[in-house]
Amino acid sequence: MSVSEDLQQLCQAQGTAQISVSKAGTLVFDQCPMSMPVDVYAVQKGVVSILIGIAEARYFLERVDAMNHILDPEWTQLTKPDEASLTVEILMNMTTGMNDQLQKQGQIGKDWFYNNVAYQQLKTALTIQTGLELNALTQAWLFEPLGITDANWITRAKDADGHAFSALQTTAQSLRKIGEALLQDQLVDPYYRAALGTPSESTNPAWHLLWWNNQAPTHMRPGSDRVYPKPLLPHAPKDLISARGAGGHHLSISPSLDLVVAQTMDPAAAHPPKRANQQAFWDLIQQL
Image 1 (tube, rainbow, N blue to C red):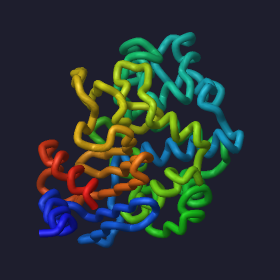
Image 2 (cartoon, one colour):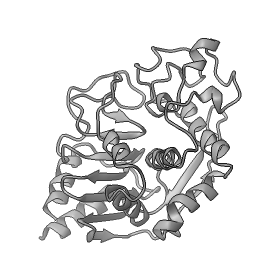
Image 3 (cartoon, rainbow, N blue to C red):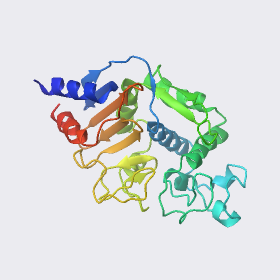
């Protein structure tokens, strides 16, 4: 079989909804077993990071801004000095020193904890500073300029803790367009994009500004304190940056290869892709 046929078979076995791959701006692989947009889970964080980068370039906010200068104070359970020390960038880096109840847990600015509750406040900060609701903002700054018509924010049903978080629904084809525009420096400052691939100074250097990077020699994973002594994706390009969501959704970019890979998963698929399949996946992607 050809490389494309092998990749198609692997993606089918993984439960892929859509996959779209380009090199140097040329589409080299594109499959769409499902046409409907799907909730891409934490891939949305990569999109929010881009929106923050655009907002910074347009002087709506800065990463060094204190969140208390944007939100009403006492939005956390921290002491006043600790809460006052939280910046936009600290929330992006998941180093808030808080647990999901927004209580003190760890060292602010250093200890990584994948905090979805605190993260939501970045969306609030964007809407406050721009005066636009999240859908209107994303449409105006990202989707409309890129010709994306099948993506929007919805509100999920409440989770077990009573949180009703917003979810981004889209397709791999639209995520690929975002990745290509990011790679070509059409969206954010080149220094901002470079920072996405630079290991952070937190306990999880593989996470920086809401993106995963493959440059870090170690990584942590959501929901665990374990430190893995290897890059996040050892078989992927070393300079890969990736926005990744539960179940196998991802938007991944390698500047050195001029490569963009976007993959979404069928919500009805029985199991997410096994990590053991990552080697085969990235071997085939790099052979396209």
